[in-house]
Image 1 (cartoon, rainbow, N blue to C red):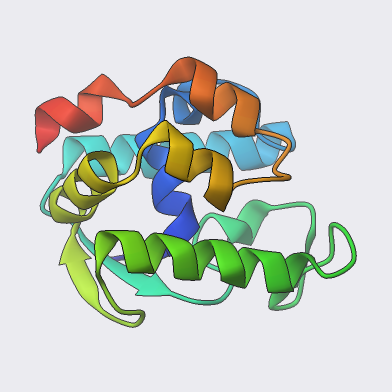
Image 2: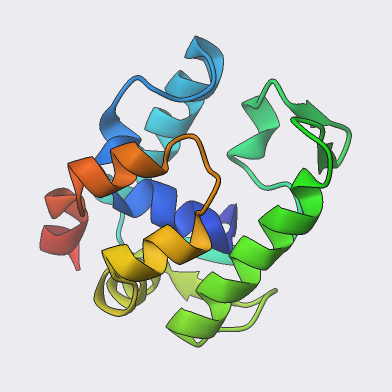
Length: 140
């Protein structure tokens, strides 16, 4: 099972997830491994959590259980997670098949939603540019 924050469903469902543009090489490689694992096993269970998740484990901004990238970032990350949860109509601490979660994400979150949810994220322009990851669409 993989543990993910709701907003990371957005990151992983976009072609951006396959690019080498995460915060650093270590995080990029780690995120690519998770991405590949999900593509290869669409029935893999994902538990949606509202704290640092499996992607965050290799993030250079993680300090203990929180993000220290900039002031009030943890508040904004929670806001992002809550918006995603609301749009895909699931609750935190629930388990779902990867294919189910990515189908909900791809079908229910538009680029307009993405602009609202991820406002202020330095990677937003890339997520808009690279669009939805077809390998996820084909696996669901």
